[in-house]
Image (spheres, rainbow, N blue to C red):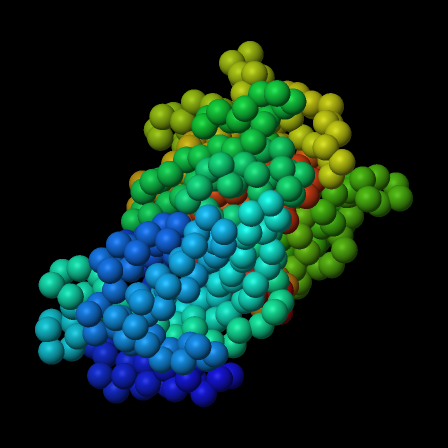
Length: 505
């Protein structure tokens, strides 16, 4: 690491450790925060307009009069020298030579600087990132120049953000790939990104402060048909948390016991002679501890069987959720769809989320599934509820379910606590609760998540109950999962980074 960068980071974190107010976070600010958006806006004005179009006024307005600029090749400059060199150098003859700066997406980190002696108010921000430069001459294609790291110190001067210190270092003649991850505030770029990744449609839901703040849809739900904001997606196994909500809602009403063996209501004929069937409870079914395979069809005889004793280990199982469905339907003499409608959908005024296709399902808004070669799959219109799979929903309605879960509308505190309490370790250090997988984000924070994958379906949802954040990602592609990492990192910030690290370690 260059000495300049090492010294900057050392001094910055030393300042935070010794003097920052205890209630302020030392982590980089979230990419959805106002500070992040403000600094990125200033960066865009400075470079996309100022540098890339030789608009000197942007530098004059955005640079502090006390600017100090350090370049690992070009040396040191103050504001006066920088402007003179820029105008007489790179911008001397824009018609015959034009330089362009490009920020490497996702490289930027922004840290807030707080003033302990001024009620902990923000007085500055440190921006760290990577950018690269290109050169263009008449009648010639643009060519790559160099890549470099940068550190910018932005300070509030009379209420205006000004660039006070700028460090540009570690210049290398290596071009970095920037097309893999788009600038997520630009819908047109995201549309292009989808095409590059061969994902036909993407639905996004952004939850902030416990509210569904954004619902977006990109791409096409079928050839030539743009995805509407209320696109209907099949979300595969993201069905399971909804089934868990039904059971937990019944438990909250005193109508269902999570720890009572379910053989009182249902026993599958395939395991009726195995005494272990009397050990199966709703808690074990929801946390994938019943001992069942994912699906019985994987067995040679196509019959349900135990892979392990109930309650002894984690074994992801769609069969377990279907087992619970049959127990619920037998006890209450209603279909799972009817129970979900009465207990959840109708109270929340959710009208298009369904376990089955009905006469009211708007097929014109349904996202047809595609394989990795962009060949469409045949649409299967199931008419029998599956507790583990094939839920039809929209970003907006599933987002309503998640926000109702976080704000206590759906479940009382004691039952919600049951849901988010780790029941058993799953894989890679994660745990399963009741219906959701649980990520430990450190410092007492956690995320609930569930993904889904079927032919032509990749979907995943996250909620962070303590910070009231959430993210929904629905796609209609076998390779839609390739989008997850970039989206999770961008919209969930440092928490997203932690989630990705857990998944990839």
